[in-house]
Amino acid sequence: MELSELGLDPWFQNQAAERCQPEQRMARVTAVDRGWYVVRNEEGEVSAKTTGRFLNSTDSTMDMPCVGDWVCVHYDAETSASIHAVLPRKSFLHRKSSGKNVEMQMIAANIDIAFIVQSCHFDFNVARLERYLVMASEGHVESVLVLTKTDLVSVEELEQLIAAIRGAGISARIIALSNVTGAGLEQIRELMGPGKTYCLLGSSGVGKSTLINRLTGHDTLKTGSVSDSGEGRHTTVRRQLIVLEQGAMFVDTPGMREFGLFAASEGIGECFDDIRELALSCRFTNCSHTNEPGCAVVPAIKGGQMLAEHYGNYVKLKKESELNVTAYAEKRKKAKTSARVGQAAIKQTKK
Ligand SMILES: Nc1nc2c(ncn2[C@@H]2O[C@H](COP(=O)(O)OP(=O)(O)OP(=O)(O)O)[C@@H](O)[C@H]2O)c(=O)[nH]1
Ligand SMILES: [Mg+2]
Ligand SMILES: [Zn+2]
Image (cartoon, rainbow, N blue to C red; front, side, top):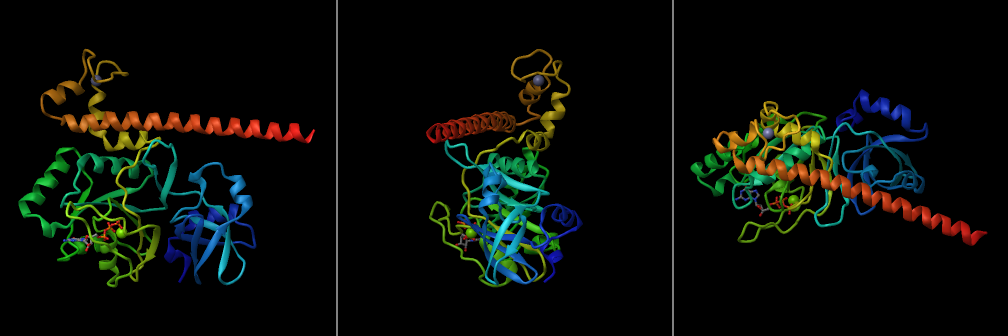
């Protein structure tokens, strides 16, 4: 297998020329599991660890290797390797993990298309779709929506779901899929190209791993049943990049239910471009679209041209993204201060 089949292109080659030492080679991260990595090159996959020096040089979890990253690797023996550097990313998917803790997490890097997967049966939620769309857009990843389990709903129900998506102003491509009947699989295959990387995102139990199994034609990945309420049981526990025989690559991810946005103003602007466009006609450039005279957004909602939910979600995501940036900056400042205090104390005791 050539590195180009793993997605290597001249851009990454240039990055490697600047960053990888002569004794190091390029490889792609194909799995991450609590501090351990699997990297793949022309010869195959081996497990890898980051060097202490690399760890010391990074100060954010987002700089750590993640699935899909290109890395500079030193092969110690045939079976193990050390990661010395992560090459800059062309695109990425990152999130704030759920809960109060402001911890950022890279989901995957160097992704061409994110398949945002929701099940027609129980899981469907337009606001959550918008959240995923913003995340992908922010990381320069193209999105395609996949509605699974169409075998469990009627044609009319499916049409209603699609109408709800379009009603929210979402223009991304939608593929209606059944892993059971195989309907829609061909549309997924049409999008797949050699050397391209795709990432599956969505709640637990929606059929992400099942889709990959359908595409490979084997039970490559473990899949799990869902409860009566359609809730998945978190069958996939690690992120993993799978190379299909046709040459396309898929990143399978554990289902995520809740996740936060971080520094996503650009992505929000792109995904809610209808609001952005309308806001251009507001009398004041800093209009908050609440009670200012000459506002163009409020009348559009009142007149029914724009859904109140759509606008409400926009306001919510924008606020959340800004709050998370502030909270993260404060956390880093505190960490740095306590590191300085710690160092000062060490110096004191050495005196
Ligand atoms: N009826 C129906 N069932 C499906 C379909 N796709 C997947 N399933 C079933 O849904 C269950 C969950 O599928 P998985 O592929 O494990 O779901 P997942 O998205 O990978 O879930 P996590 O790994 O937990 O994130 C399994 O029992 C599948 O057989 C579909 O299109 N129709
Ligand atoms: Mg899975
Ligand atoms: Zn306004």
